[in-house]
Length: 79
Length: 367
Image (cartoon, rainbow over all chains, first blue to last red):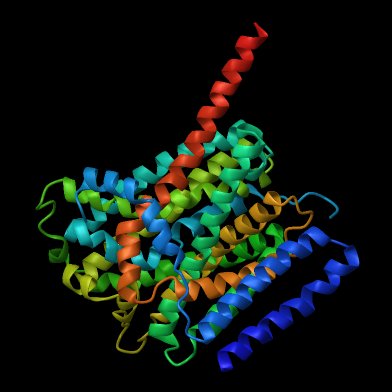
């Protein structure tokens, strides 16, 4: 619960720091990217607070790089 | 925005040196000895030669478009569609890289220095400084690096000199007992660490003269390389292979060995200062690569305003990447090299080849 509060608190602080500038300058595109990352952060933070299973990006990366890894292993032998 | 941002060649040298030290300074001795055993110092010398070849490749690419950053000519060379694809890959890699660096901070601080502080808080504080640096712009950050660097060099030399009475030459004997191959195999580690240096091409054009920038690229790599050779040689000479392989952070253990007249003791925290500074500048480099890449990708006017939410996501991702210490060891020793090769060698080679053939084609058409 404390974790969730911290995540929400941090995002509120981020909004308070930057959103007034965004609105004042009418940077709507920047606003879109800004909200995308903020919502992504909130989602990941909430999932972590409730101990949900978050897919690990590294597993995906390892799967993609398998051919190169095999090539490296061919030259150096498996580590 | 007023006048254009620029940095001096000297500041670029320092940044490259700090980048080369980066996180390598803490993890490298432990990874060198996995294959090379007591010959880790020879492996470190070999790896310097390897990273100089990467620098050669990057400076050739950087000098072809003086005054333009990597992100600018990526689309220029490959065209809009393929340029955007490569840019997305670049951004994703840099994003993940900052998360990994953050995780390393949390791993070290959480296990060695602040065991009872929640790691998220440590990461949040570290990241807020990186965001601050990114928002103040390259000039302020590089002036800071210029201010910090003399301290780092002095502290480092002090550590090496203070360690010298504890050197035992029998720790590196026998030399090359298993032949040359394990040594060359071990030298791939620093090569892997250095492969993400493509991101340095973002700051490369901020130095006004391309030739001076090239020179300082080499100089910075040499300084960082010498520091890495010294630290890996010192850890093998002082600790020995067995002790290094038993510790998660051999360089930190090395610091604990310093004792001057039984009076100056436990000054290993100096190594933390060194490592933190170099890691900060490395994270800064990849962080601005990410924000500039994102703003290029979506055609934004200002890349500093989106820094905070991106940093927020990075901190959270950094906490879920590695569920355990063992998975991090596996990642950095087995998977990292294959993750970095397409980024560090693939991007510059593709850009150079396409650029070369395009220019040939234009020449043919002109005839």
